Length: 283
Ligand code: PAF
Image 1: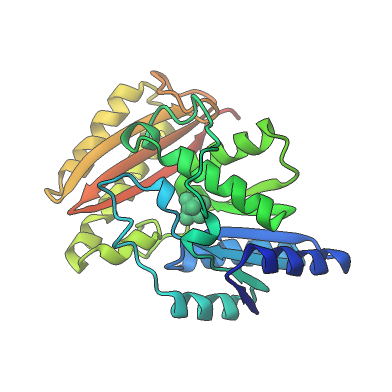
Image 2: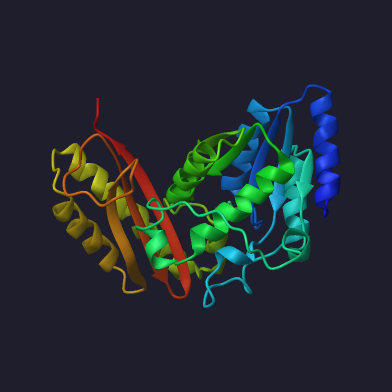
């Protein structure tokens, strides 16, 4: 496994891989890798001949009062995980390698970023789409792999790729959960054992949503009340949003039909956690 801190070396190594006819798979990450990331790498390995992982805590997607400084950066552990998973190249740039000057160019996907995390984290998605556009230009992958846990991110990135005719395909991989249902996230590292137990109620609320839809309930207001009730059982959980949105537009809907996304964002202590389930009643 090669590790590169420079854009130039990444370009050179990817070019060499391509010259020998290899397809390039790319897993962009901010490190603090967990089983969710490993499942993205595994899928990339099944689909592509040469797998690149980026590990870069991107400052431009964090708000001024967010956790950029304390975001976990266990680089040695991360490299071991990549090595074990059979990654070919890790790109671990410094901030000055990625942003030598203060960027005055950015990529902004409109509308899809108005609701949910876009509403509660102004500027977040502009940071994500801009860094992903940069990373795609550096790595030039055939496929890039994203987790369903960040459902809005995956939809926004797909739209950016389509709108800007970027020559790659976005593959979205299922959420990997801990035993109690908590979606795997690098931020789970912040949780105390008690908070981790309480966090199981996030998935419980989403399961409630599925149960209610399965039992024929379609009014989202009714479902959201029940989901909130479950979350409110734990005093440690502070709800940021509980939304049921159209899977394509990410706009709130009043009635469940076709394909929708039920999504939750909460804070437990100072830790922000998100989760979602796609629901398809179109068939
Ligand atoms: O999902 C993440 O870890 C980040 O948002 C990403 C896609 C690596 C961009 O910094």
